[in-house]
Image 1 (spheres, rainbow, N blue to C red):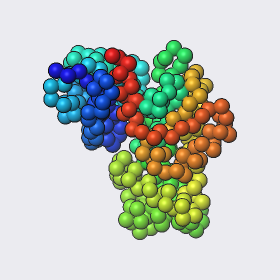
Image 2: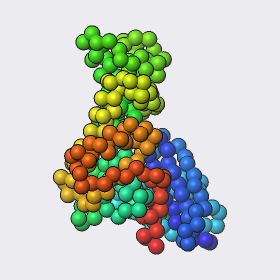
Image 3: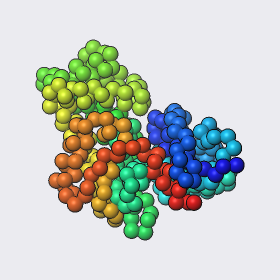
Length: 295
């Protein structure tokens, strides 16, 4: 049997699995759907991870260490319990929230990871090494800078403007086109009747296209999302997070420069000593770094 290490990153939409030899050769890069991923209960989550890992690991290979970044692992206790359950089935592992992978993937050991993708969450560590998590409450309640949350806020804004008799500056029509409906009432029904990540989040590009076309309302929603991310950084700082590096990742902020630019500008204004970075490689690389430390 050949000894290998593995890293897994489970987000709201997809799971990335990377496998490397002990000398650092990349053997596998696999992407799987993670729509049925759930971090609870930990025993079932461990079985889910093991099943996906088997799809990625080459034959005649032995996984001697596993790093896991998992959406839904929102407390240190939950992460430890999941690692324990993985240990019971023979997988020596380190488990963190998926946002905690960003700092590791960027090559830093201290700092704050900020995700704007399916959700919006930030993770840091205190001086004792315990993880601190803020945000990530889901697209119905919060996550203002996640794709579904941005669409939710944009819809609320255009309906409020319509109620006040204001003309459409391009955002209302963009959302109507994205949802394939005609009129504010139909837009409200399309959003309300299916409050799912897929229904809301998939329409997020329309917000950015409207902003690029000149919609001031769209630009204000994007700035509001960036403000939310900066708020998350401040909350972690107030709770004792260490390190000045702030690594941003996730499908929205990586692919929408307008959001990242607003985030950098607002971060500089409120936390001038922090240094922003846009993650340029998959967060799962951070999971590999965690696995490598175990060996």
